[in-house]
Image (cartoon, rainbow, N blue to C red; front, side):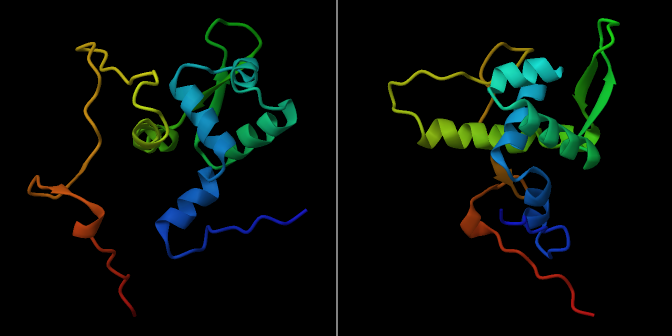
Length: 150
């Protein structure tokens, strides 16, 4: 088996982020927690993931501060997984992946779910990157400034 390389020391913040959440199971677990699944059994049955794989991914997400465990909300002996502030910060990542999938992975006539604003009961606007003066930016309108050399 090939040993996984860690990117936590990389200069690139994308590489560091992928070190924490860069496999599909982790992102799907996070998506399901956003959608209200909290217990191991809910996550396992909803994803169809092997119990050992799920246990490993959940342990990693807890150790990396994306999820935490709390006593079950119904007072039972179970534990529930909840997003930390760090984990909640991944909401836009999940929405961006959702919107990219909607744009590129469905036929025009194929039905799919929609992300709805609870207050208005209407679909949410598309994500977009804006400059500080409000202009919409595309990838060609940006560049990454190298960090200062000492």
